[in-house]
Length: 161
Image (cartoon, rainbow, N blue to C red; front, side, top):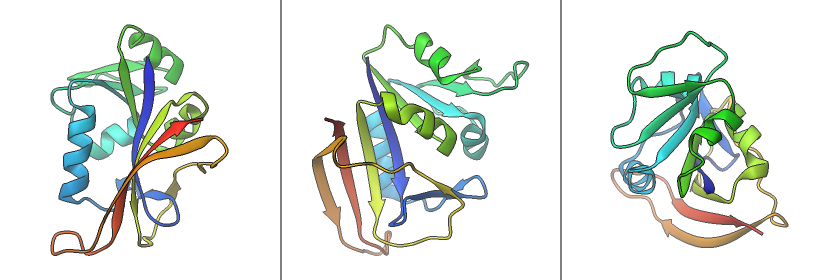
């Protein structure tokens, strides 16, 4: 099984504020959909709450301490390891947040699909540090500001060394 994270960060590695993404923009949403459609996605409950509903055409697994939680269109489990056990026969699994789940997953990730925005936003939640001695950048595509996206951003893919 290949375990990957999919995340958007600003230039300070911020990922969110007040349980919301820092920014939504069409190119990133399209990339997220292309990467995760047809696969299992694992997220914390707060990340699920920020989305408001299960994402279509994906197996949605929510990690929470609330054992009695029942969310239509999702599977509920109490730990990241249990979530991964549910996916043990799958080729690709994607961790989509939030900060606590990313922190727990970082040591076992194989890949990171990162959208890096070259702008600073007010954030209260951050992605853990990616150390170059542990991670190799294998893809990078940079886009300049335009009407729908008024900042420079890059799509990067990292592979564990």
